[in-house]
Image 1: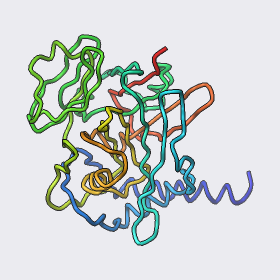
Image 2: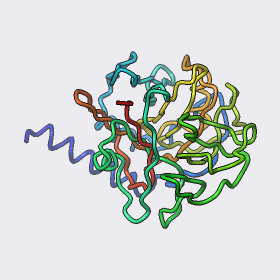
Image 3: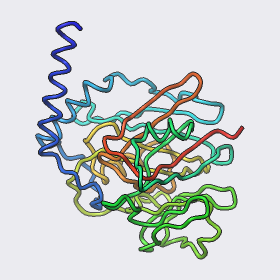
Length: 287
């Protein structure tokens, strides 16, 4: 190991030890919109320096990169004062040409990349909020089994019913019968409904983010951020003003739970979750 590599490793460890003792960990706080992305706090700046050493600063996929014939990935930079402060990673797929399911294990939660390895799936992303005992904090249905309940009409739901996947705002389109749902999870807040930004007020907490969205053409988008630079409002504002044509977008669990793992024959991409998570969304291209 050369001297540079050793110094780099020491710096990563030092930054990690510094920030884990002072970085907020509550990632279930609901945020509100703001047009200006607030500057990072000192702990966040330190942890983002840690991320800079892990993730290449140069965008790997500034344009859509085909992973399979029906799944693609793109990295979108977010800048502030001419400096990149975060990268939004978007995976786009056609739900009609995908096999989508939700996996849960409250007894043996796994890191997101471990979920992908265990399931053998092509794409895995973390799911919804969960309690200290790893049980879902909302509603979850998988393989005919229902866990928790739909708690609020202001929540959103991602569901697969009658073979069709949908991101839905429950206030505008409630679920009348959960028996028709094959797979589904609720979470909050709903970020975008019918193309409209739903958040209001001032947001302060910056964390890594995970969201799931649907476009005006019906495409499904899996969205994660690499760094701790965005409030929920900041992410929502970015998505609303992007060229992704998002109609509905639902926030999923973020912070240390945020994770995305992709593996195909000739493509490998991983944004590691820092915590083990009990539920994930799993996607494969239809065979």
